[in-house]
Image (cartoon, rainbow, N blue to C red):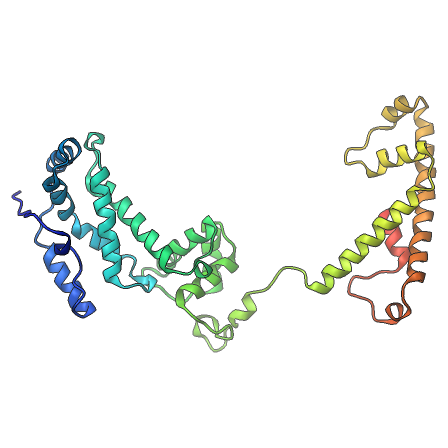
Length: 328
């Protein structure tokens, strides 16, 4: 195949900026269509000339012969709301980087190698241009950002249709993220969207707001749980003070340890029989339980009167119930 690669300058492969967007793309496509693709042997020869002698003409020919590849990859990213001319410029930058780093000895086509660098350059440009608030910061969110539209096209048979809850759930499973992440990312890619809008545009459908449920506990429940935990911890500390040293050792080992020892193990440690250890455990538990109930009741009596008369927080229980939960 004959080649028609003349020496080009930076402005030759730049997208014209003085025309309308459509005119600029058309003019640029006409320019890059002048350059023929290369055979494998030609790619290898040009790459060797660049690597061995830094022959600028060789690198120039390698780049211009793949400008159409860069434009084709850039077109696949038009759905991100960024100027197509900028996408093509970044694609060309990735192509130039690929040409400078391509090693001919690996016996691979330059187009395969260049595609990776072209996509990398475009990804970096998109990440710079979009707010991190819209993209997310984790690796999973970034993967979702770049793959969501493609997964939606596969599900809809080629067209990007409205995202339904079922489709969102299927995509979430495939990309290993939550359904909420999928729905929120779709909203970011579509731009501002009312949470009161109907799913899929169906007037009878559910509102998006109903699908974004906050699964975390509300402040009222958190405060109630913290209050209960403090009461139980205080009751336990006070109750343990009524035990002797041996009773406390047995109770802590048998009831409070993550991996409690057997009766035989404690018997050998304390130089008593296993039956005696069992009796001490039962007696110590009963003593601590009574002391905890008493300490919790005394604390409840000491509370301010307005608090005792006010409606209880959700999840709040009686003093006796709290103590019993500690030692149930």
